[in-house]
Image (tube, helix red, strand yellow):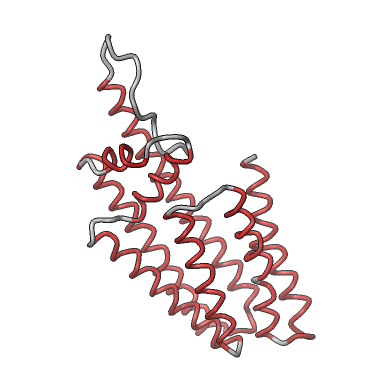
Length: 221
């Protein structure tokens, strides 16, 4: 299942958009070719959202970023303006994610709670567990990594735009996807690290008369 997800991610987020851009820019122009190239990823994301029943904090975040980003693209009017607006939107999203740390609601923790809930764990009990200081600090760092990803990618895109311009959108697309996958691997490693911490915590809590725990190891990756 995970292998098929990787294949579909490559297909809808990179290969099809690249083909649309490469084959359609002469006929449609840069702006409409870039705009059209985002449609497969948009439809695929909505499909994954509904299929995986992500009607929670994670789902709302995905939908907000998806629809806000698409609206900005539609209102931009030109390819150059659209790509620069994506830079500004990335900065906004990075700062928004950072702000969840300061209001004591780190987004990474809520993502993990949603994963545990989809596995059948009580949301309130899981959140109480994750707010314990030994786990909470790791979720803060994980959220900071989410925010840094948005800011880094915004900075990378702005550099590439200034260096190469809209005409090299195919190169920009590949560079952004590769950097996104690198950050995705780091974030996954962060979730795995926290999972190990939680697993060890439950193992230490188990006693001879307590064969199980109320909450299983979360989040599972």
